[in-house]
Length: 95
Image: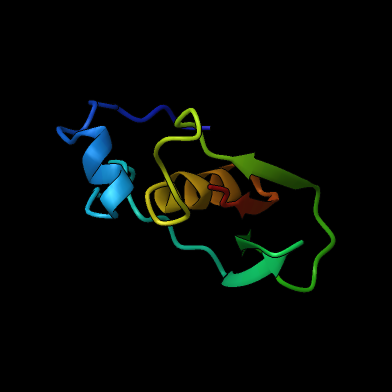
């Protein structure tokens, strides 16, 4: 996996809670298939780099201490994981 520079974005917890936060600074990698779904009533998003192939899967739970983060803020990170690791990724959102 390629290392990517990371700089903490300048926004507050209040911005995250209000939904005004910007995505984390990851380049938006191309992934063959991306889709939204519900898992046990929770929003989720899947990323599959090779539809039709059986691949290992990674369950991604974003950080944020139950305060911040969502499917969109971590979309770039999940795309990079699926693309670079060659695995399916399921990102689960939670309150």
